[in-house]
Length: 159
Image 1 (cartoon, rainbow, N blue to C red):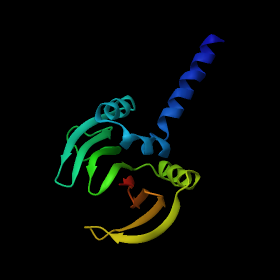
Image 2: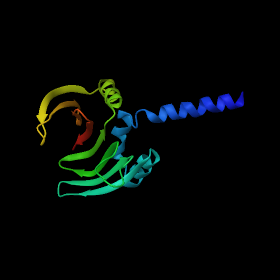
Image 3: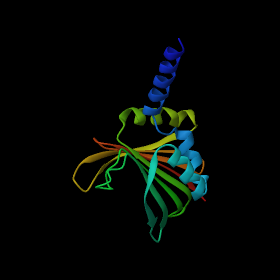
Image 4: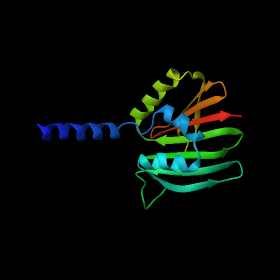
């Protein structure tokens, strides 16, 4: 009996860890963290440091989940935390190729009080079409880019 309970517990842990890596509420909290707390938080979820972002208008770090060690541009998921992002007070960017995760994020947007602002079709450098969605709540903005392969969700707060 104890063995059966242990097996069910392990299967439960595995099934919950395979799903969505972060909730939208978690993403919204992360840009307000300092770098040390952000590192601890995403490392506990299995992400590894990839590189720093050190541009004139944007400063931060990039982490990845299941990073391809031979080609650091390829991973299952990326998250970028910004200490400076153009004219925004806070910013975070999350990229994934999990379409189920995309649907979960979309369903959480209106629950958290964000209102749909606009949509657009953007053609990338390869000529492929991407959908763009923009949502706002006060000074907060969520934008989503979707392609045939992945999606990217950004959360920003204006000054």
